[in-house]
Amino acid sequence: MNFQNQVYQTSTMSSDVRNEVLKNTYLLLALSLIPTAIGALIGINMSFMFLAASPIMGSLLLIGGMYFMMFMVEKNKHSFAGIVWLMAFTFLMGVLLGPLLQFALRVPNGASLVLLAALLTSAVFFVMSAIAFAVKKELSGVGNFLAIGAVVLFIAIIANIFLRMPGFYLAICGAFVIFSSLMILWQVNQVVRGGETNYISATLTLYISIYNLFTSLLQIILAFSGNDRR
Image (cartoon, rainbow, N blue to C red; front, side, top):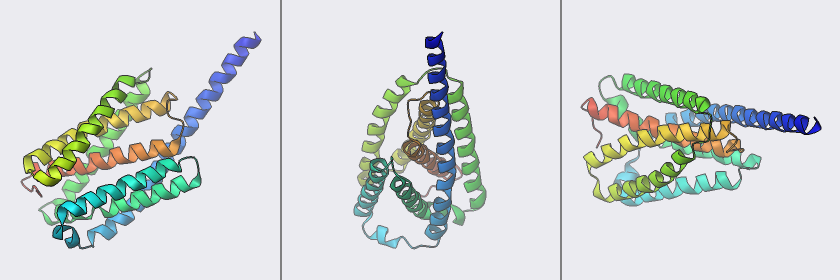
């Protein structure tokens, strides 16, 4: 009887921890959209001509800067400094939305296309989250697939910096839509099933997935509306 009570208490505590991580993850994810929006407003009004002068070097430096900030978030994920680094990272990512939003808002019905991409991103997020809750086991197979996919996509991005092929870039965007959707599914499932116990790390993964999903969808929508920025 005592053993049964102990198992029940452990299970309840584990459930409480998972619920707390999930709640904090969603809360921090919502908060991360604030610096992103502020950064986007600044980015829309910025000139990015300095990147046009040396697009390859500029792209590599930006990628290096983003990975450095993600590394700092992960390094400090057990302290308040991790949240500070995460807010700084999301602000930077908002600023980097500038060129894409500038282009989108210049085309006919550009604001509607941005809104459509945002709505589709939200729909995918909620659908993937719902599936993650419904699945009764950890999606370890999806995790292995995502690990390989991340390497392939990274190589494709670096290659396209030099190749600059519009069709290849659009294919990368399509791959990112699938990859990011599965990443949301996997990460939420990890939190729900107890595989991820750090809400800062979980928020970072979900934020990057949502960001990539939104930007990829917007570029695909722009391309199919006859306004390919590439």
